[in-house]
Image 1: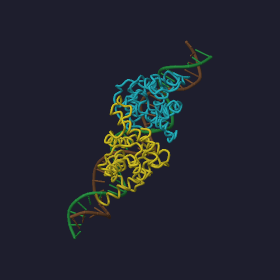
Image 2: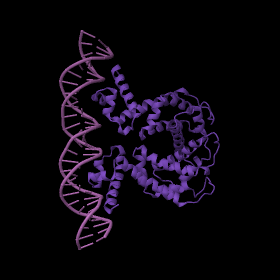
Image 3: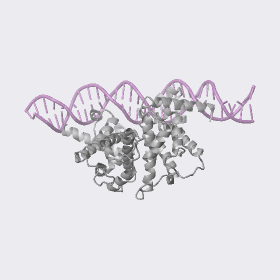
Image 4: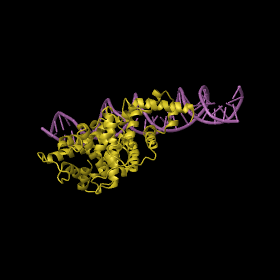
Length: 183
Length: 183
DNA sequence: CATATTATCGAACGATTTGTTCGGTAACAA
DNA sequence: TTGTTACCGAACAAATCGTTCGATAATATG
């Protein structure tokens, strides 16, 4: 990975992010990206097989790295979960989401592309599954595990969406409280 | 609205739905649609300004009509909500979703287009808002109404998604129970 | 510093897709 | 029967896609 490669890769990502603030993903063309990134057409296709792969790699850089950071943060922290815990994995995740370039989160959520949610949720599912027994099972002998895990991940994802759509005015602590009170 | 217009409109919808079972929305071209619908290119654009409008109108036909049917079903039914109610609006909605051509639901959910979820959720938001006081407020003085309504609608939408993704094996009654136990 | 590697460029390309135009045909409603 | 209008099919320019090529310049390595 050259310095050249790193630079063009960054230029393309930046241009792409800027375009995401102007229009939906579906209406962004490769031509626009390379013009704004000031990069040759050949170069773009040397880096990304297609526009969708560009989005995919951006999501990976954004989400996966955040999840990695969070999970490394508390490697062997396995105490019993408490709902109002001010030190939970999910609160830490919210903090990372807030710090890690709020704008990108907003752009991704607003780009009208289902794939983004999928990347986010697939990461969430793993996280929830790994912490599943930490949630109180409630009135739920009837509810299948599959549903329960999916439910918790969905509520978190939709909580974040609400947060982002409303301008992220609340603190991560507040959002975490909403989440725990709801789930 | 001619008989001619109704026929071509249906032909286009049918072709579109069939294509949705084969590929993502983004990869479907107008050319494919008119070929499968056996309709002239001019005719397509006389009916739908663009591919997105076709999707929009399909969603409206599917979702809005279902919601209309449900809300008309119990116009002045305002009794206090009970969690295990076997006669709630949401259970009726699930029954309609099941009857109304299960396949389309699956195709729409699988077409990788965010807009579909938006249509569905915007309808849900109205429904939930109209029935908001029927849900027990739980431990929720802290939680803003906006969040609460959004949460309930999201949980319902994601519950339906789970149902669809898993093949809709469960009965509407079972799904309604999962929903009420979770929300 | 010298050299081999390789990422980038720019131009050009055929292939698809888009959305529109036009005149002619045939189905429809009154 | 008559006037309206939806449909067709062909053709069109414009935009976009993904690829090819040879030339250039930045980079890593010895």
